[in-house]
Length: 327
Image 1 (cartoon, rainbow, N blue to C red):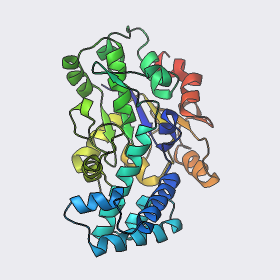
Image 2 (image 1 turned 180 degrees about the vertical axis):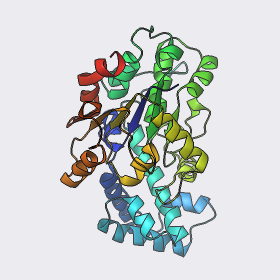
Image 3 (image 1 turned 90 degrees about the vertical axis):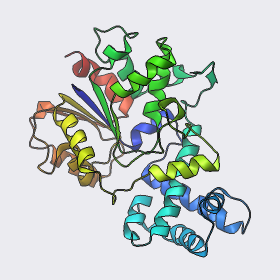
Image 4 (image 1 turned 135 degrees about the horizontal axis):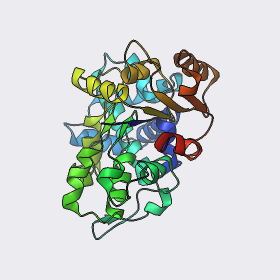
């Protein structure tokens, strides 16, 4: 039974590395990437090479690259742009390759990249103060940290991001407690991590084929196949699993999210928040309309059940960790 659900948006992933992008920043990175690709003619570049190896680079691919580069400035995010041009499957194919390449690059610049020595990740001390580092240290305070299964037994994650920072951190955290590879397999299954819009795919430590922060073209291709946009609906089973986990929780932490109506409906259902759970939510850098939307959505709940804090995710955990984990 999950009693604390942690919901992650782009703002929370930034704590692992400044290059982890918001939606607007990812759009800018994709525009810059495609501009470089199109200016270099026929030379080998990441997206051209990926398309060439995946059935061949065609004229419609180049047309899609130009359309994305020239038109993306009129949208807040690449997802918005794909939604507008969803009748052009080639555009979606190119866009997902761009997302894959840019997010993999961002992963490689995080504090989580570390090094693998003897099969174990190093550099975990660099992320000790992040929101996830605090959850790992303070969830279930009566349970010893080396009892990894018990210490994280009632925590689940829902993320709107494509990156695998949560999984990467958990691998390093499990290893810090002295667990062997054979033990990690079962533990990974015990901590639920739902990616609403897909991810770049399971990392090698989680039995996948797309290494964290990989730079090779095959990883870019494989990762792109796992990405969904918000026009590609969750399956009924996926939606049911996420809703049941959130609705059954005592605490819901909303960290670095934008409070989009579609995303809130996935979490709390079409009928909206029932006011029975305690919500802890960051509002740092939200536009006025986003803040009003968040406040309005939870406005009918008892005031003591909803806490907004204009802070980073780690600051919210530092402020309220006793109330969340040891009430």
